[in-house]
Length: 171
Image 1 (cartoon, rainbow, N blue to C red):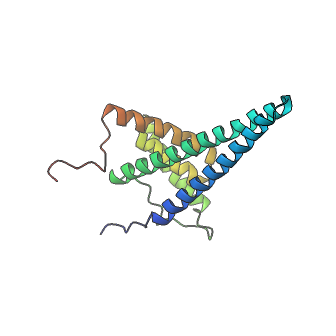
Image 2: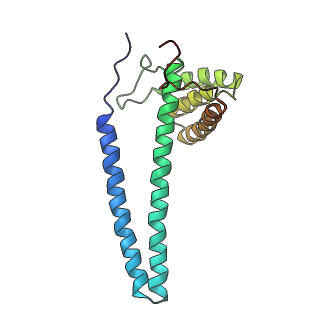
């Protein structure tokens, strides 16, 4: 029996609301920048340009965050479809929901051996990124997830990555 998937709509709605709220804030900030520039004077123009740069940075951050999130979801789906996701349900958890330290370390040692056998495999890199996260090493988890993303994009570009959403032959 397949695991029941959680309804993603509340999360998507929350993300949509947050993007909308940020967009409104950035528009208001941009209007303030234009007013400062229109006021004239060296200080007003300097502040206006500085304030105008902030919304541009904000848009870039929002776009990059959404792109990363979508890509990580696709990677997660591909890893799960390949049957290589990390199942931690059977491992002991703390009351906070995090894995017990010893269990996380054991999981990490197991996944690290797999990764060392083939560090060019993006799925192994994805798995070790998740293992780093479970072990509490967020910095290394982010670095390995970046490497996994690069490998995922390369596999996608070369056509060696099957698209789980694409219709399969004979279906």
